[in-house]
Length: 420
Image (cartoon, rainbow, N blue to C red; front, side, top):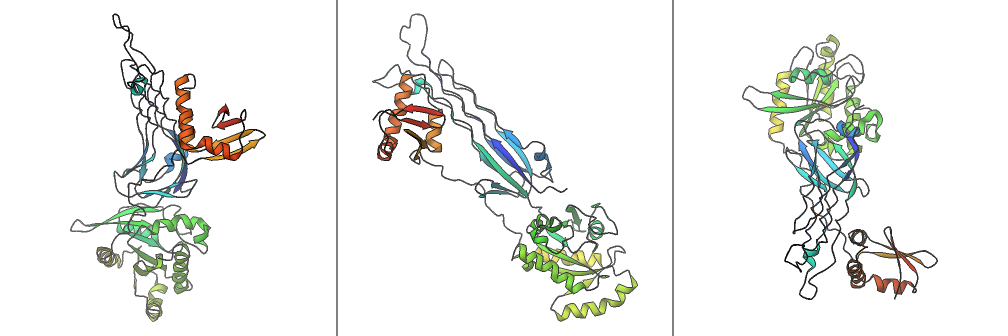
């Protein structure tokens, strides 16, 4: 089955712990703190690559993780940063946050990069906490925890021209004639199960990228026949070649059906420039009925032309018309311009709730990360975290919620006894 969207879980690298260390050297009895900072964790980055055409590589590796930062060392040595994890995706990949549905980026050009998960910062060593009043701090920070994010990657092929029509209209044959593409071709519906790309080359060196969009059927906008997946690819094109089967009972009804499905999926799709083409002119019955079909299409203000993709009749003129329209039609703009910056929650963005008799939960992502970065075995680090709770208003919020001395307070997986 054609995969044009996948879900993937990405995790950035954890920051390295800051070192709590004091200089120990002969003849230097009071060397002072020299604990270095931890290294930054690696980011998870998506990069658009022109060598890829599908997202199938993520099917077997749905979870990806960047490298952690290394801990700081003595002599004020900073830990090594974790390597970024760069994941290659095809051109035309849309990136969404699975939890919120927000569009994070649209990678349309080779080399476009999007940081989807930032690595945790390295914890500070005790050398960074030395002051004139506290020259030997037994205090440091652990590395910032890793971030995990679930993403939905959606591929929309980038092509200048999309060839659309009902199954068995001859789209794959036309693509193979106009370009060097070799799609699967057969005299039965649904031969094409995934879009095929080909490059149309002109004598002066100009090129057009053509996409054969698999046959759309009634109900395609709701997913019938994978139609919703294929309709997404049409959104990227500059113009459409709407291929009608000259042997069909009523090509005008077929034309209306495809346009209706496009409109139900995206109201702007039918407004794309279309070249309406009746195919299979090599068959005597089609050649005989072509004048009647042309008059009927013209009566509905639909300019049209007739070709035989199999006999290559009229295909060169069709190629020239596609080029003319493509030259005067601007390509669709990316859904989102990169890069994307979003404000993260602040430390004072927290909530207080009851979890039972004399038990309280303080929740907030930045606050929980601060708790994870605390050295609980060091008294000075614990006092620093207590000052933080007081400064951002946690103590006051607990008091207003009704917390009493001796109550249990939970922050992430840590539990404390409340003392007002």
